[in-house]
Image (cartoon, rainbow, N blue to C red; front, top):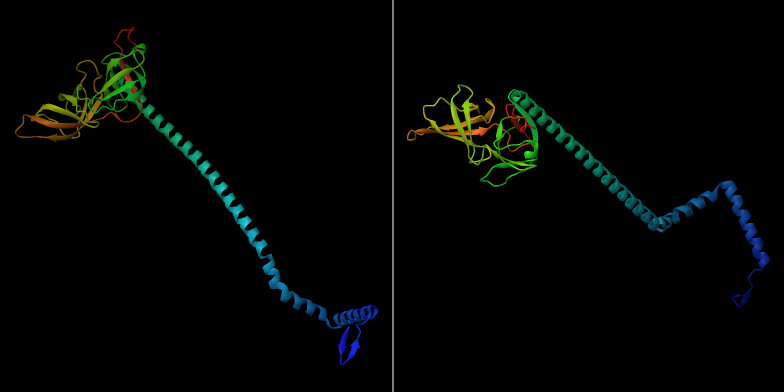
Amino acid sequence: MISILGRTLRPPSSLARLIILVLLSVLIMYLDHKGDYGNYIRNTINTLIKPVHSIASLPSAVTGWFKEATKNETDYQAIIKDLENKNNKLSYKLNRRQTLEDENKRLRSQLGAVQRIRKDYTPRLAELLKVSIDPYTRKLYLNQGSNHGVFIRQPVVDAYGVVGQVSKVYNSKAVVTLIIDPSHAIPVMVRRNGLRTIVYGTGSLNTLSIPYLGTGSRIKEKDILVTSGMGGIFPTGYPVGRVKKIIKDPNEPFLNITVAPMARINYGKEVLLLYPKTRSKKSTP
């Protein structure tokens, strides 16, 4: 109860309060129907509480955004990894295909060499097992030996020139001394005019030399040197080297001649073993 000016006011009864609320509700509905005041009130209330809704929903929105971003990053990483794997596979296939194409070119070149020397020799392809890394001895090891008919001093060539000759033979492998080995010498002639001389190895991969040719000899830079056939080891006329440089010292009786080998000694993995056709059937493969 409330006391005002000494008079006690009693609160309305439950029935009176119900009647007041019903009348107030009817009044509000009437005003809303006639003047659309309800929408105005609702809009005003929504405007006032919108920031509250935004703040309340912010944690949920941030969590959802973070989950989506994390999911997208994971998906992108998976896509990138898949593309990298596919790229690696394609690169491997491309490199393998290029290797096979290069090998086919080398084999076709070897076939051309076979055609040139088939008249007096029977060539056979041999693969390299390893290459000597000793700088003072230049040798190759082949996958064929005495079981295949390989013999000492057998000529070895590739599609471009003379490689060397067999110096040791085992049952299933052979050692080839290269023409660049310091102990190797080969009789040659200048293809341009037939001048005969001997080419020696120097131990250097790309260098041969002619140390004992007189200063009056008719030889020029870029001349092609081919096998002379003397000694009966190598076929006549097969390329050996190209003259790179000629030094003429007036105080010396001989020219200092540097020759580049024609054979691609440091390339490929196949060479040709030459078997003379005049050799006995027992020795030929």
